[in-house]
Length: 372
Image (cartoon, rainbow, N blue to C red):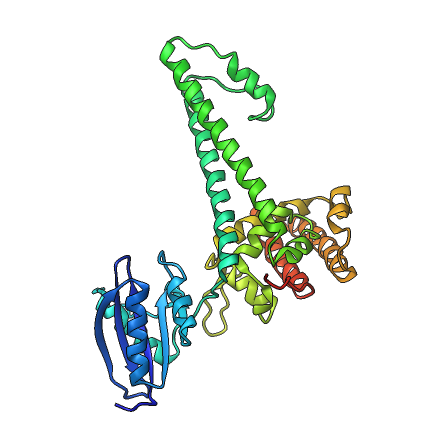
């Protein structure tokens, strides 16, 4: 075995074990399964040292999943390259119906050698911590929505329909307090649902406050502040975008960012026939959702509101110019597409796609703070 050879190492990770396979460099290089090791830092360290003593260059890879990025960081700290692979973009043969840890590790090693795998961006530990906090807030928001739905369903089953314009206001709370039921158990159900909603609201408010406090000391805080110059992008939208996407300068063009977010239409063309369909939805669903929510604000005419002026105070002139250009263009485009008879959902998605391009342009103008 050559001391200076290059090998590609495929790791199939699970909670307790890691299956290991290697593919030697070259088209005819041997691909073999080495076995399983414990999923512990010490076992991985021994494996890396053992392979490094036999080969000159080690190129590791494993699929992104619930095990996180700790394995990648450990291998990188030991001085070797480790790619985290997007599972949805791994080539698969249509006829394959057998899936085992051994096969997966061998496949990863073989495809990594062939250059057929797509690596994802790995955030640093600080960025990952902010992302987890943002996702925890989103989970709290979903929990609150679910608990409110429970109460609404209970009221609807008993014919109690709020006569006001908007629920979850003080008027709605007073209406709930005045409801009359036939059985005492129904009052208990109402109280339990209301208490669960109050606790969920308190949790959501607490996490929202914590997000604002953490972002103020984050290295990406200047970028988050700059993104808020854009209409429809308030603090939580900007934080979600940055936490999920990171530095947009890693994308060479806005089209790459649009495709990454799944906001471009799918296509099935052959010969002279061109057929495009719905958006691919192949990217980050969280960012796609917040952009589409923000795109609804462009149904109103372009103007500089007081809140938007406050958010733009202290920002570079180039950022403010991009934000105003975006507002003028997107408001006009919204009206034009609606006048053409497009569905409102289609129009809003088109606006969200262009919002991503303007966010890309703003992100190119702002430098993140150096991490402490």
